Length: 77
Length: 135
Image (cartoon, rainbow over all chains, first blue to last red; front, side, top):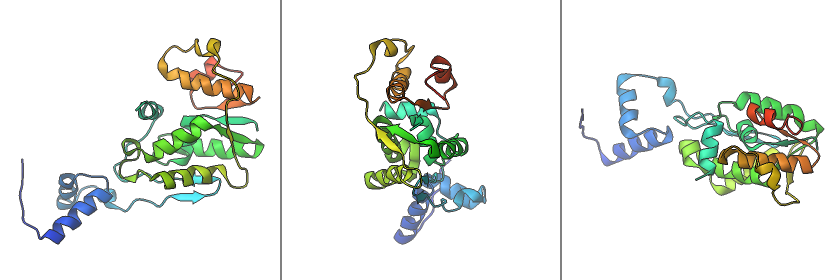
């Protein structure tokens, strides 16, 4: 079902930016905010650590859990 | 150098979104002091994966940032080597591959063997196939 509502141009930009930052579509982001669900998904992504010899790149919100099969498929691209 | 790190384990160690990240991070940390390295193919694969939006979603890195991440992992108290193969692919070894996905794994085993080290891998099938060349 499609719901439509009005925003200002600045509000629209802010909503799209917020959804992108969490790796979500705009619709998914708005549903979660409006329905108060899975608030932890709205938390900012943890920071990456590039310490010499011990790098940990943080996963972005909504990023898939990677396994070897995904790696092989990605490298075959 | 005692271990060559395979691509999946190396990437899992540096990327928190990998399902084996915690285990891979611990294993890599454990072996570094004895000497370690990655093949040039693994280096490039890690850079590519860090830049890939299918893998990283909105967290995909720029080339500069991905290179910085890989170089930073290779640095530190126990720096890792980047190993270049010195011989051409061994036809007899690679002919044992059952499918296309094993070709690169077997190539890394060859590089480890010619470097006089073992390939560190999570892949149980690979360890079973090459028990003297893997860990």
